[in-house]
Length: 113
Image 1: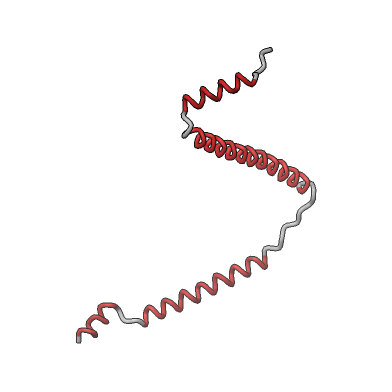
Image 2 (image 1 turned 135 degrees about the horizontal axis):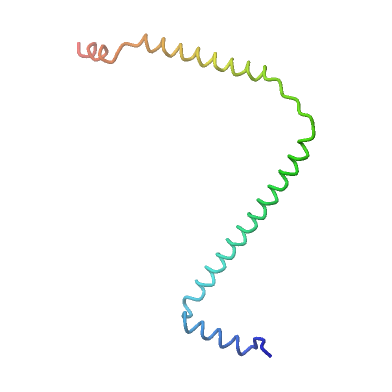
């Protein structure tokens, strides 16, 4: 008895059309649709983030009981040492090149002569 009947819906639609106008209704419906789409995507992302967090916790707990051995640090350190040595050599070469170049004031005097 208290359920919506077809004539209730028709009256409701007529009131909405009279209040907002027929020109604004498609824009309003479009914006509501976009809002619902964004809301749905955000809720899925939030649920996905929770799932990912749970998965990472499971993976971490599975990995903790296993004995881990530290990786040898010597190869990484030697590679870094080599890079540092190469960069130092390049810096030294640049300093030599800069020292070999005449100062800007000297170049101006030579050009003026």
